[in-house]
Length: 300
Image 1 (cartoon, rainbow, N blue to C red):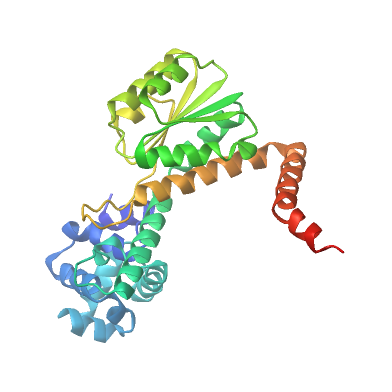
Image 2 (tube, rainbow, N blue to C red):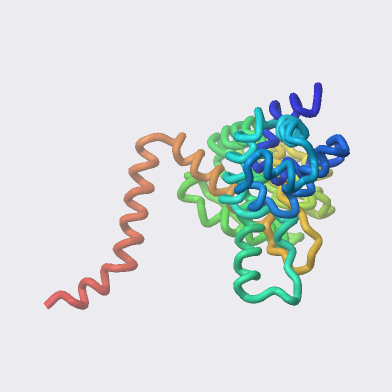
């Protein structure tokens, strides 16, 4: 399969700036000049005609078109449309590294850009079939236990708070001893969700093994194909734009939170009208707790 066919098959051009970066080493020398121009000043390329883009990159117009095709576009016009879409979503992480010289305005813009671009990347690389399998397991569970440490522990606690959507008792465990205790007591009708961006935390891998040995189904939420993923029934790979710069936000946590929203909402939607009605009544009661006393106080 050619580079062009690979990019089309995998939708690599959705965020065309990241697609350019990913394909860079496979491009011809002349096409890399176009890629350099796109990565250096994408907004300038966006506003350029074909002739202007060629002049900016120091190449011929056919070379610009070949570059567009190489990263999965049908031509220059489609490339510009996708470039506009990418810039609207936010600049990619490669353009969002913070420095000590940045103003407050720059910090705000870069962190939002980095987060938006990374979430878009995670969405594009999410395996929908794996999500479907995870939803089926969660829908059939009689209890769900969430496990994680530090940032992943925050995701576990947030997921536990969504138990009305899941429709069954949920727990969240962030202490290693308690995690093993809970995992060893799980039943075949239970589901364990083990959260770790690296997927290499030894104690969490042991939690997954213990839960499976107890007969429970295990779902991993992890950032890559990892040792944890190998120990689970379903692995949800939540890939983000990793950056080792010390000031970048914890995007893996944000992406995992979004995936938990997807899972809980998908399960709730499949539970039918009776569950929806119970959930609606619960929300109504919460609203009354928030506003009822204030309204009563104003009543003569």
